[in-house]
Every structure is written in structure tokens, then in C-alpha cells.
Length: 247
Ligand SMILES: C[S@@+](CC[C@H](N)C(=O)[O-])C[C@H]1O[C@@H](n2cnc3c(N)ncnc32)[C@H](O)[C@@H]1O
Image (cartoon, rainbow, N blue to C red; front, side):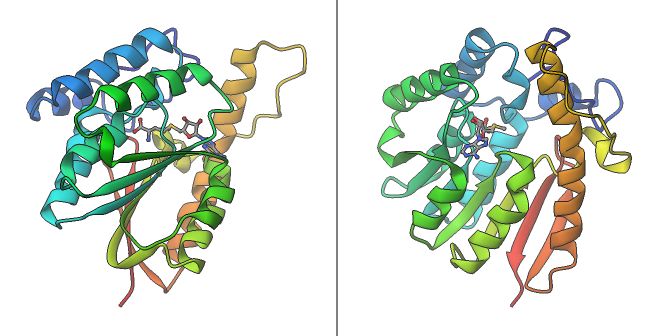
């Protein structure tokens, strides 16, 4: 999805101009149902459309799932369901994907996801969990072949620790974490004081997201130093980290 000038949140790209679009054009097109979710996301919540997984990411996740014959997936952060439906399509007919979202920020995105799950021929594999991610992670039962972590960045370390403590990831399974390069801001996180109460919602959101660079840096440092896991930070889209339990 393109960065939009009117988006509330337009993170810089980690690539030089046009490369991201070139990669999209040079990759296989996604299914009609994924294209439709992307269109509905842009229509229903144009100011948030940037935070959806892209077509290349969707295909990448599908390839991970199908290559390894994965059957059980957990997604933390559903949003409008683009990644959920993509991953569901790559699962066998009796596979399942649990997807967690609290939708505190924007109920319109829940509506897009619910409709997408209803009309998808892969909808029977999708189990939405409407809850705060930290409490849901205490409840769900492992083990999962793939966990896609894509929610609020200040909680990334807690999500990671809960996943390991509760053994939610099976041995040789994959934990995939999105946005781990945070638009390149990880190299130079800014310090913006929280916006004044009187400021616009847009300013508040922009400051909050800018400050998330610090959380992403802390998280990257945390897992890089953890001997329990092996980690590869990929320069896919906004940074996608692959984590496996160390054997
Ligand atoms: C980046 S979007 C997820 C994108 C999605 N995975 C995709 O493929 O398009 C992040 C989502 O995480 C959700 N979220 C943020 N913090 C959360 C929390 N503490 N608990 C549950 N969901 C949360 C937001 O509501 C939002 O829909």
C-alpha cells in the first residue's frame, strides 16, 4: 500500500523512492479477496491504511506457511484482516488461525475484518479473539507453527516474553515480528514530548508513533541478546524479524 500524504501516520520508508512499489510490481499479484480487503481498508479508514500488511508481505507469509506445511497460526493484531485472510488461504482446510485485536483505536477496521472473514472461503479457519493482546496471550493454548506479532510496539517485549514463558511457539516454529526497523527511525529515535491536551488527534497520534521508535530499539536489543532464540532482522517492507527457538 502506498504512503499517503493525508495519512495520519506516514512513516518514512527504509528504501529509496520507488523501490517498494517496484518490489510490489515485480511480485505476483495477490488474490482478488486480498485486493478487495486492501481497497476496503483504504476506503473505510484511509488515515490508517498504511499500517496494513502489504501484498508482498502477504505472499511472503503465505510462502512461509505453505513451505513448512504449517497448520496452526496465531496473529497478534488483526486490523482489517488482510494478513489474516492471506495466512488462512495458505493453511490446509483443517488448519486454523487465531487472530487477536481489541480494536480500541478504531472500530471501523473491525467491521472491514468481520465482513472479509464472513465472505472468505477460508473463513472457517479464522478464529477472531476480541481482547487485549496481553490478556489473550495468557489464555490461548499453544503450540503454534507460526506467530505473527503485529500490534502495539511498547508491548513487544512483554508479548515476546509471554510467548516464550507459555511455550506458545513450537520447536522449529517461526515467530515473525513486523515493523522492526520502524521506517528507519531505529537509527535515530526522536524524543517528542506527548502532545498537549488541546492538540489535534492527528498530532497526538504522530507523536505517539514517533516515540515508538524507542520501544522498537529496546525490543530489537532485547531479543538480539537472548540466547534462547535465533534472530534474523529482514529488510522486508518496514522490517520483519524472524525468530526461532534455539535448539
Ligand atoms: C499494524 S495493525 C495489524 C495489521 C495486520 N496484522 C495486517 O495484516 O494488516 C495493529 C493492530 O493491533 C491492534 N492492537 C494494538 N494494540 C493492541 C492491544 N494491546 N491488544 C490488542 N490489539 C491491539 C490495533 O487495534 C490494530 O488493529
